[in-house]
Image (cartoon, rainbow, N blue to C red; front, side, top):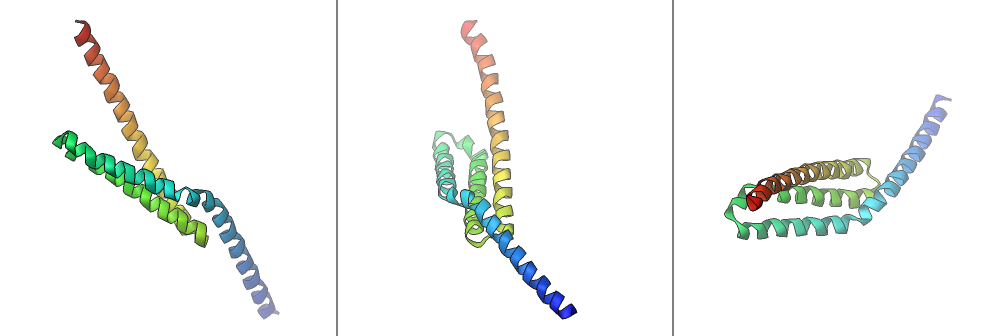
Length: 130
């Protein structure tokens, strides 16, 4: 009887794993379908970072940031496509973690840029008026 229960358990576990993989594929399919666009945005960001060096050599100090975030986006795109095709929970988690980090860094950089823009306006307006 215990052998029969073990067989039933393993069948139930296989069915559960198959349903889990199917759900992961469904969740990752939307993310996976956007993987080409994620790679496109990453390439544009890398090209923009490289072209910014021609504007000023001081940009070499910060060029690593867009290259790093672009690498995160590439990794997320590959992991999302892999999760969509294989149903791997680990790949889906990896894709979402890299996207989380990408948006966190991008948000911080956007906030810094906004604050520097406001500071520049606060300095420029009195200079122009005075």
